[in-house]
Length: 316
Image (cartoon, rainbow, N blue to C red; front, side, top):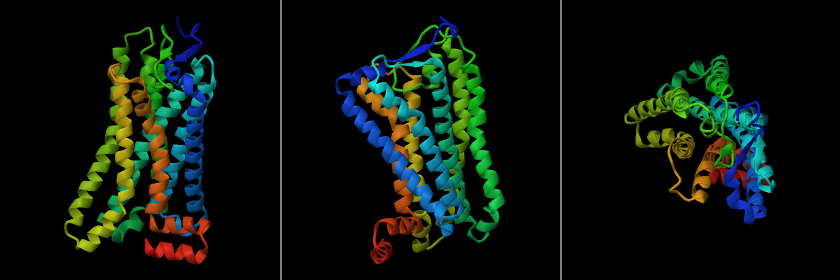
């Protein structure tokens, strides 16, 4: 069986949901609506208020856009397949989802690295921040961060779409590159090694940049007063929460794709595989919306009377 005859891919993980598919459908629908609502609200508030157009908030919008993109690449398809009787998808659709999900995943690390760099400049070079993070520099960084994952993963993806397939089973709720490669007629070990190289290129430079940024921030903070240390580190907390949360979720997915995990209950594997696509898109807009003083103030104005919003903002 090759690409000429293989037309569908069977997603076996949906079998565990068969007896409760309507309840599971409702949960996933709620998660998707929540993700779209929270991220759209954050983008709208930042876009409509010029005083929020600082680089960090612009990068926060990028993060939210990427999370809407990633969630939309998976959750509508999951909703459709939960109610499907066959749990099969066209091969071409599966390949498209592979590209969307992997560019979302690598894009998330790219944006988090950019946000870490912003914190590094803001804390280590506060007097030169607006010069270093000028509008032209910010636009160049946005374009680079936007194109980097698309191009780099595109190189690996170009190898995947040329494969011939002898199997059509993926033990997940969605298509990922490594599971698709395991169904190829070639020795998957070769593609696996190539995939690891691309994972290294896509992820490691960004993680190194983030770690470097916080090492330098820690070095500078040691020279500051306690109050200044607190104020500096407070601006880093939302980013650190996002970074560690997403890194943990990504590790769950990478480990499952690369190692034999049949000894782990299927329900547990499904939950862990969904963590990177469900948890960050819900947590991040809450963290950045409520954890950033100016953004929080504008969000509260939408839902509370003006005087009460000011009182709450002043109290926290």
